[in-house]
Length: 424
Image (cartoon, rainbow, N blue to C red; front, side, top):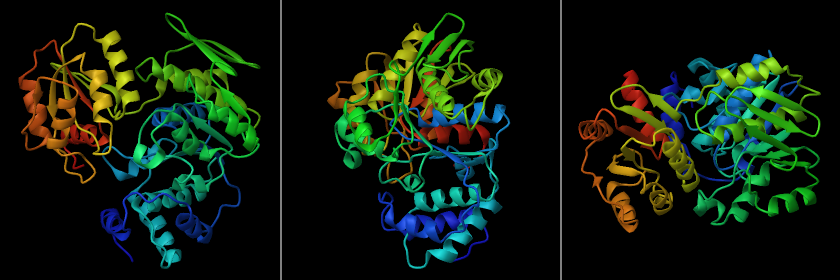
């Protein structure tokens, strides 16, 4: 197949494979083996886990680029443009580069069927192979063991957190989910875990695999001060670090795990303390506790599981203690609505259920049923679009209130696209 536009390629890919999610490495690895390989593969950091993956990649990218390294980052999903998934030195790649990668993949694919995500992963790896990178940052899409990203052996693996999510695919306990996430670990290559309460299986499995494991509170630590923070491990101490440019107390934990990764790689990727300071100050990541000025204020967060809801609740209580919260909400149909609802119902004054035009999103009736199971009141529905939902929340809010858009990348994407006048 050949298409003249990125839009044409993506439309075709959405219909090529029979399943939107099809975990397994056999098909994607077979095609990857047929693609041209770089002479010198860039150092690889693979980031998995439940929450904090995107933030961790953003921290790594910002600090490494401040050190002068050439960095490629692969993340998913995107908020407004597909190209956001593949960046080189912080800049999204052009349509032409992605289309050329798709053509190379199609030329060797033969009869092997690939999913939309697998096509994207192969394109990112193919583009990075031709970009003379020092480092490639790969974010796991779902799970780890059977995710397409896992066809690459990580030099260091990073797991910021373990929580209950995608239970239909990964299991319904933290232990089962951790086992899937640890699929990105490699023998005799270090792994860093930023979860403050990691499942015991993580240490057991690491010993069996001979993977050097570095845990927060045991092998590295951090301490928040009024105006700065301190990080340390067995060999290094960094003091007077600036608070990260990403909002929320949890981001300091994400940054601390990233600093441990960079410490382990320092013999191959030397860093200056100034590069770390500048990276922390300049890091950006849309959609994560992103505040939009206006009357009332709007807060965007792409969180979509109970752990994210815990973090959001704590942030709202500490940062906006006196504001009435109006929540625009929806999630994928397989998410834990009850778990999220129970964690947020004490702080949310009004709920507005936004319809989303995506087959993976829950319909409004499902959301209403789930919230009713949590005994949540003041729920508004019946809107025909996201724009109509937003207008209702704005009309029902006072100037001193706060509107929170939470529960799905698609919700935040709809808002950002409306604001910029772009199509999602």
